[in-house]
Length: 209
Image (cartoon, rainbow, N blue to C red):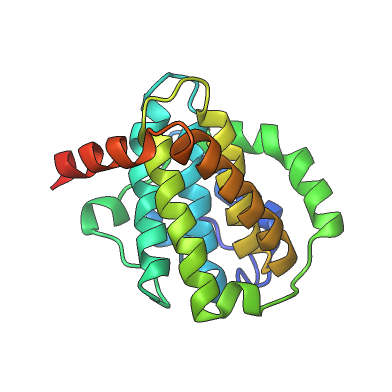
C-alpha cells in the first residue's frame, strides 16, 4: 500500500514522490493505490507514473512499457473523462518502490526548483474541454513516439512528459502552455518532419488490434 500523507489533494509533487518512495524497496506500488485522493490532479499522477519507465537505461524497454501507458492517459483526456479508467491487469500493477527511490534521488533537487516558481494558475488551460483534448492529443502522439525505436529519444520524451505531469499535478496552466510548445516542437521534429510518425503509428496500432 502507498504510505498516507496528509491532504494528498494539496501535497506537492515532491511530497507525493517522497511518500511513494518511503518503505520496503521490494514492495510493488499499485496504480489503484497511487491514484487515491488526488481529485483533479489524478491524471497528473497517472501520467507521472506512466513516465517512469522512460528513464529505464535499457534501450527499447522503457518506451515499450511507458509508451502505451502514456497513450492510455492521452486517450482518456481526449474523451473528456473526469476520472481515469484502468484495465484491471494495469490497475493491480505498478512500479517497484526501489525504482521510485532511484528516481526520487535524481529528480528531487529539480522538483525543489520547480516548486519555487510553479503554483496553481490559469485553470482554464487545464480544465477547459478543448484544452484537455489538446493535451490528450499531444500525449497520444508523444506516447506513440516514445514507444517507437527512435534512438536516443527516451530521455527527451521522458523529460517532456514529466513536464506535462508536473503541470497537471501542480495545477499550473502557465507551465502547461510552455509544455504544449515543447510538445509541438517534439512532435514536428521527431514525427511529422521525419515522416516516421504516421507510418510507424499505424503499424504499431495495427499490432495492438
